[in-house]
Length: 305
Image (cartoon, rainbow, N blue to C red; front, side, top):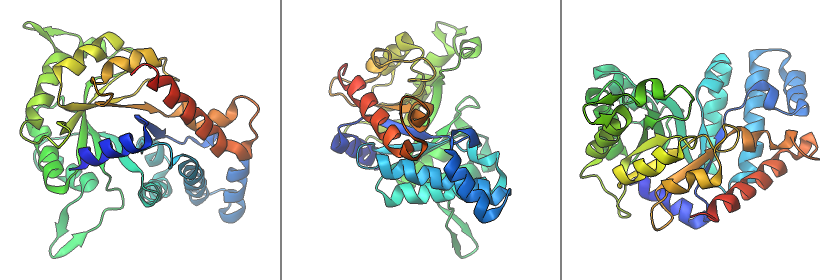
């Protein structure tokens, strides 16, 4: 089961973190930009080439200490087909280096469309007798559960069949999340109701560590709710965004973990990708800077769990 694979990678690296790969053009060192433009001119292809080169450098520097990467699809989609090609190349390269890949796509729909999204990113689609190999297939996917059960069950089915995982939005890290998620319906908030649904969707699919392939997204910026939701979803792994650039700290995320130091994986995107823009690093040392920040983040979190 894929959730067991993720847990084993976390245990092997002694590192419950994931590096977000959300590469805006301005995050990429100028020498990488210049080399891509020299090769392809000022074209979409140059942009895609620079994105992939940057990501490969980050992956090379992180793969032995960080168990997983989380590319956010929007940062590639905005650059068109060349951006999507860079995303496909990033996914493939990370897998080659032994890293677990969670695609942050926050996909959702209903019926056949939900099935199509699931097939696209979790694998398993036939075109007649052709077994389609989707270059964007990942080990896990973030999904939006706020359309209800019929928007999630196709993903759960494919998780069980293909050995993948999903992380369902429960309490997101953005400042206005409470406009909807904190509303009370009956005697529960909406995010508490969503937590109950996440638990129900994963019932009967527990792996050897007791966790199901139906995880949750809960932001580091709401530490009280994060600790509460750890208790409400005892069998769901929690993907925690909001550490670092969004304001969440190591003490804030400590409540996401179980008594064994498992149960959560903490994301940092800009903090790792843009570490080269801080301190005394040269642009050519972007990989070293990312590695140094990933080690600092790991040690910062481990002292509290």
